[in-house]
Amino acid sequence: MKILTLTNEQVLELADMRASVDELRSAFALLAKGAVESPVRTRFRISDVRNILLMPSLVRDKVNMASLKIVTVYPDLGPDVPSTRAVVLLTDAVDGSVKCIMGGTALTAVRTGAVSGLSCRYLARKDSRSLAMIGAGGQGFFQISGVSSQLGIQRVSVFDVDPGRRKKLAERCKNELHIESVACESVGDATAGADVIVTATTSKTPVLDANQVGPGTHVVAIGAYTPESRELGSALVSKASLFVDSVEAAMEEAGDLLIPISEGAISKEGVKGDLAGLVTGKVGGRANDSEVTIFKAVGLAFEDNAVGSMVHRLALGAGVGKWVEL
Ligand SMILES: NC(=O)c1ccc[n+]([C@@H]2O[C@H](COP(=O)([O-])OP(=O)(O)OC[C@H]3O[C@@H](n4cnc5c(N)ncnc54)[C@H](O)[C@@H]3O)[C@@H](O)[C@H]2O)c1
Image 1 (cartoon, rainbow, N blue to C red):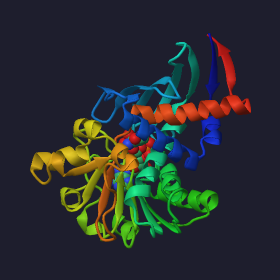
Image 2 (spheres, rainbow, N blue to C red):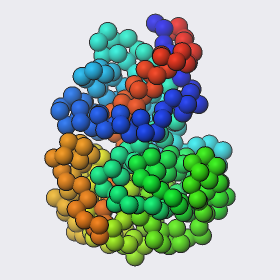
Image 3 (cartoon, protein in one colour):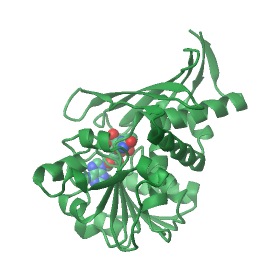
Image 4 (tube, rainbow, N blue to C red):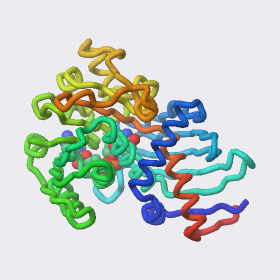
């Protein structure tokens, strides 16, 4: 069996952010049509902070690809090892052959940034210009890139508990995205006047609450992915219009919602809808310029399939990657 292998660097070269957002839009529409199978992932809990996730999916229709991602989240290995590392395998659902193995660390970062960007199309104010980024780790740059691919972002304020990381991310935004960027000393400094706020931290307890979020803000929370951890305080969640990547997955995994539900601060029915509903128009997006919207994403296996398949097609066209015989 001959398989194309793509490194993380090659994935980054091929996966344009705007194209990834469009690819995900189509994939969520396929999900709404019933053409996607993406069961809630299997989580092996290795320790309080370490998890291994197995994420299978099948996309039918024109793509017809099955995917499997193995992702490890080990945030306690020190600054030189990324917290989120992954590999993705693509299998042709028509002839059953394994087509590609690619660096899933880069793919995860791009597709998660693209999901956040997609949420902005429907939920952020169209005149959003300032972005606050809370968490300057592996996901940070791609979150900024995803949001700014959809909105005319002119200023980014970065906060991370690690001063070196927040400075480095602000520099990278300036140099690579050409957006005015500042490293801030607190969440409050970063979020003051922000039109969009993204949280992408490994914190298990809230990093953002109602007093730091002004009217009309769109909040994207992608960091917490277990029922027992959250980045958003209950007061914030209970004052906002709530949207998720998938209701089914969120109700299994999203501590950001499950904890306030268990406290009685919100109810499950308080969730207005998911991305499939938003992209197909079955669910209305932002209702007015003063409501606070929250988009909570835990990450779904078919997102890797959709963006990974796009990267695979582009790699074949451009002759990128290394073929290996197994
Ligand atoms: N929803 C999804 O689809 C999705 C996809 C990828 C990663 N994730 C999750 O996102 C989180 C971040 O991933 P990463 O790869 O960037 O991790 P990372 O370890 O590279 O970065 C996390 C950053 O959060 C910072 N941080 C921790 N606590 C903080 C706090 N209280 N306030 C401010 N900053 C704080 C750390 O200093 C670090 O820089 C992880 O929990 C990961 O599992 C979710």
